[in-house]
Each structure stands twice: as structure tokens, then as C-alpha cells.
Image (tube, rainbow, N blue to C red; front, side):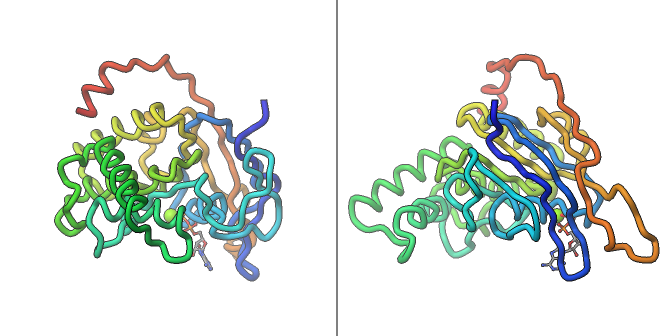
Length: 253
Ligand SMILES: Nc1ncnc2c1ncn2[C@@H]1O[C@H](COP(=O)(O)OP(=O)(O)O)[C@@H](O)[C@H]1O
Ligand SMILES: [Mg+2]
């Protein structure tokens, strides 16, 4: 079986600073890859490269066997720890904006029936992430957990095949984080997503992931800290029990 996403000998360098070195990785469709590693290791850089926001200095990345498009296409969605949503747009406008960008890339604005359709789709997606009653709220009127639900809806509205999450729950309280874990697990199954999630919470990495990838330097040069970059030092496939749907639906309610 060929992988959905493949990285071959991928390097990222900023001048003489090596951030990532020789990253080789195959991600199967439907997997949930948790990425852990020390602060500054290059985890966010790794996500930006998969997102196509940044080109690797060397190496090759393919999505479904084809070279990665040089910008964030609709096949990849992303959620950051904070500030993923637009403060001047309501929840439903935030989510519809994703569709407007995809369908009207120059103006990022749809009119008439197309706009009505986009707003209806956005409302349905907000329902799916548990924000069905908050369509007209602005981000400033929402809790951190609600804002992250909104950011997830905004990423999912384009129906990406790969969802990239950069410490998406790191700023949330533990109770809220547990709700978000139930939500993301449910959405992962419901939308047949492939997820790559960076987290500094090792327990979260093992609870949610089907695979845990540790990015770190293999070698250190104390006199030249940027001489070596990070790579996948551990790559652990996890054996998970078959999904049980009932408790998840309860948790998401
Ligand atoms: N645009 C950039 N130019 C120069 N250095 C950068 C740039 N972006 C990130 N870095 C450096 O790359 C390293 C990895 O950063 P990052 O990927 O954000 O790490 P992590 O997400 O694991 O904490 C850090 O040392 C950071 O300072
Ligand atoms: Mg980071």
C-alpha cells in the first residue's frame, strides 16, 4: 500500500542553521500521527513544510504520489494553538470564509445563492463541532475551547484529507481538553481524516494517536548548537482496540 503522504530526505535550513535533517516518513491514509519533541526542535517547521507554507531546502514531499502543491491546497487544513480564526468575523462567517477562499480565490467573496449555500454548509459544520447555537458569536465572545472548535470547523469545511494540528489544545483547561479529545476523535472517524498533531502533552500523544513520532536531534555539537537538525528519533506504531462508537457520541453530546 502506498502512503498518502511521503517525506524523503527532507531538510530545512535557515542559513547555516539546520532545523530538520534527513526526515524520512510515510503517513498512511487514516492514521493519527502524534508528534512530540522538545521546544524549538522544529515541530512547527515540520508542519509548515507538510502544509506547503514553506519549501524544504532539500528532499521531496509527495501527497498521493504527486509533488506537494506549493501553497496550502484544500487537501490540507490546519489549526494552531491560538489565533487561527478572524476576530472581525462571526462564527458562521469565519467558517464560510474558508469556502469563499476555495471557490472564489481572488475576491474571497461569494454572492447570492452561492453565499447562502456557503453559510448553510458553515452552519452544518458548526453544528458538527458543537457550536450549532453560537453561529453569530464573535471570537471575543467565545471561550478558548469554543474558539478551538471554531478553528477546527474552519479547517474542516474545505474537506481536507489531512488535518494538521499544532498544539491545538495546549492553552485549554484540562476538563475542556478532554471534551476536545472526544470531539477530534469523533471527527477523525466521521470525516475519514488523516491527522498530524503536534503536542507537548505525552499522554495526549498516546491517547489520541495511532502512532507517536518524536522529533529531536540525534547529535549535538555543544560549540555549534545549530550544526545538526532534528529528525524522527522514535516512531512508535500503537495498537489500538477497535473503535467503540457509543461512548464517543455521548461525550460529544
Ligand atoms: N523563519 C525562521 N527563520 C529562522 N529560524 C527559524 C524560523 N522559523 C523557526 N526558526 C527556528 O527553527 C527552530 C525550530 O522552530 P519551531 O519549528 O518553531 O520549533 P517547535 O515548534 O518544535 O518548538 C527554532 O530554533 C526557531 O528559532
Ligand atoms: Mg511549535
